[in-house]
Length: 238
Image (cartoon, rainbow, N blue to C red; front, top):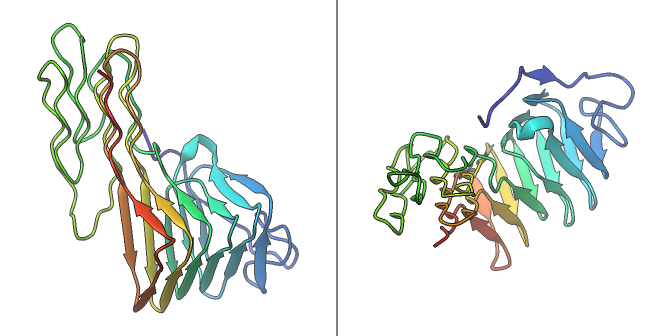
């Protein structure tokens, strides 16, 4: 289960907001330079808000539940990161650090079929697992187990990746999570890693997890050759 908990809104105080190491979200630039572990399904809703994740700063959540940030400006500096599935709705977004949602989709299962709409199957007697599917069909297992099927909307993906089938003594790889960046102005990405990949299977013959979703929409989008954006499937074992 990749989406747990009840939404909690960050308080907009005159002092330091809950996630800010300095500043406030509503009253200026909220700067984050340490690791912040947020409550499940944390959300920010501030049309004039500004958040900067500085080098050494990280946003993550309890139980890896997704977060939603709605604000004016969102910046991840080099060395800063978001380590959870995230939806960002903003005017302008700059990413020079990382957004990592690898393995934050449907969880892998030991010695059984995977989870999710494109779950990888297992052979009779749980002797091996196939890869999870999402944007493409999962790979077949070494004993001919059928890979998981496709789902979601390729042009506007919103769903997490399914997990692979679990083999004896090991789990199928978890699917990738969901990263969505929607800006009415500019999204500038430079030297960044944005990843929502599935994990490798484990044990004797666990199937790989499917890649998750990455969606970026902006009036102006810039990037460069030192940027990596990926949502690939994990490898199977065997």
